[in-house]
Length: 221
Image (cartoon, rainbow, N blue to C red; front, side, top):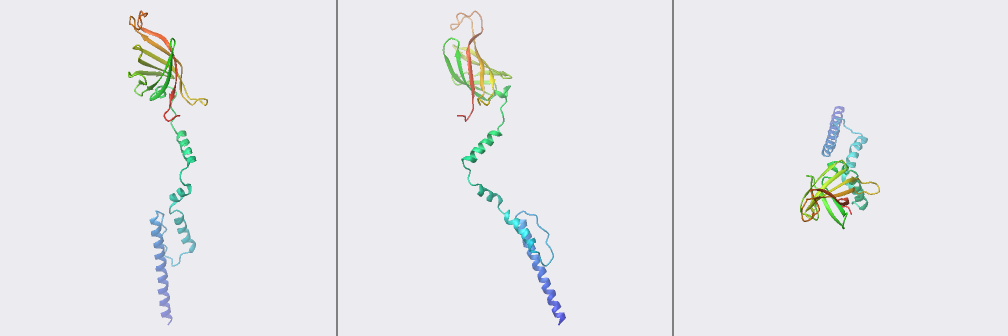
């Protein structure tokens, strides 16, 4: 009789061991499915409840972390868009204030005031190949610079004569956030004995007027 009960206890013990191993195998499979580091399957017949909770709690908390965080944030409103725009401006590369990098691929609004006569306004694009394009002329000019000084010529600027502009770059400041061209002077290249220059005895540059300008920034109001 005792042998019979002993065999039954052994069977029950084996059954509990089998169920315990089977349960931990299921937990291990769930952990692997969610890319979590699995725990080794324990061969003990009974697993403590706190161990099971320790396994399942992080699994429930991290099942969909990104989607839950997005739901808490909600749709982007005007304030968040303003913050994003400010962050984009904060990390925007700063343009150099000297040398070719300060002038290449920029557009300037220029006002020319002749010494004798009126004035005229136009825009000039300083292209990255050191050519320049004007809003009121089809002919391309040429530009060059030294430190903060820039010079560009405008073919057929007046009576088929070339006008040469030179100025100094004034970088943006707290008071004025626009880059400017200041102390600008304009010279006219005259040719002697032509209909437009009947008083000139030799070819050369003569003073013509002054100018100033400011950089046009894309998207600025």
